[in-house]
Image (cartoon, rainbow, N blue to C red; front, side, top):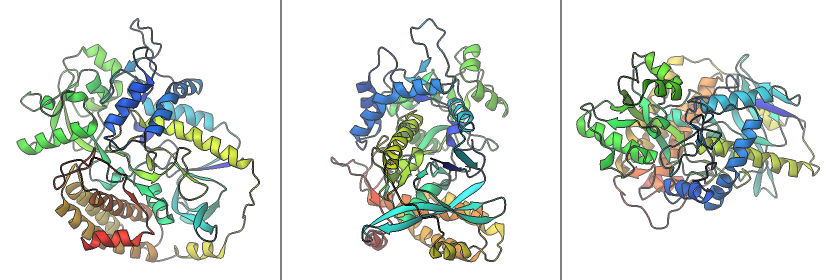
Length: 518
């Protein structure tokens, strides 16, 4: 079986590469799978799928063992503990269960897997290729769709090509660039979710956008993430006068789940008129800080902040998309032969709020499930279509249009992201959500007209996807008449006793009209 791997920019670029904290797994004698499940379910605020949580937690040890076999160099324990790997603790976890590679875990995992990948002779890698849209056809008397490929823009020559495949896996990450401030790289523009939505996939729980509580506050830092593990190792959240405040919001203090910590910081900043709060670990030994957090220490020094001697100015920023393309336990979407894994997907593991360090675990778990499912399907003979259909040619010709001024895209990009930050942020109201919906409908028409009439580019593709993501988040937020997890609406401050997933589909026009009328 041959594989084509499409990468938007360089192969390593993506949120995984920048993941600092680690990957959660039950390895300690004092820990248990049941406790990992309980912690995850509690953080997920009643919307986790218990079957999925149990399956992932049960497989966590095997996943770590597999990663070690792939050459991932996790930090080992040299403190005399019986545990071979050093385990740390993060928000929401009852016991230390975070396996890490210093404070650059994602990079260590990704680089090891890329090294293995490049040795595979059946894998072709296409860097600087951007997916435009999925190709689908109807099956079963037009009652169901099947994905048969994608239209891909080669950004080196600006030509759109047709890529056909028996199976398509979307692993494009989250949609956090839809907000003005984010810890994510520039590639996180929600491309996979937007494409899947346009193709007819069910999209679930997009109102649950996780804001990481502690990103470095500095005009030149681009919201550099300060890992939650720094709080797990004794870091304190304080006001500029040195007063701690997290005890007022949760008995777990700085190790409360991220949604609680983010709202607490947001509240303190608004109440005191602050631009930031402070994260202080300077009371710990200098040698410990430098060894445990070498990347954070080095990065902060670039901005003249010595974390061994002074506190770090921090603010919340969007960090993780808990909703996404709805998948089952095998990562299948509601479109045949189309899979989704990682942050782009909604598996039910995270519920209304992702617990720290469960995301990398989810990626590996569902990657393995996809492989098994495809191997099972591949035993059956399937007739492939090699030809390019007439509809493909019609689609491709639309991109040979007029040039455009980049200032228009730049302006729209900033307006949408600012709108989402101000109107659809950490704390929401119906009034702001409805105003945001009206504005995004105007932006969407303008951008779709732009997409149809101008020369195709990666900037136009991302802008188009961004406005779809904004619309999906707003519709999802308006439909939830309660506050839960990462979604907090002042008009509905209480939680329902029987929570349900928010599922939207582009084909359900009646649902979209309902919210427009309200």
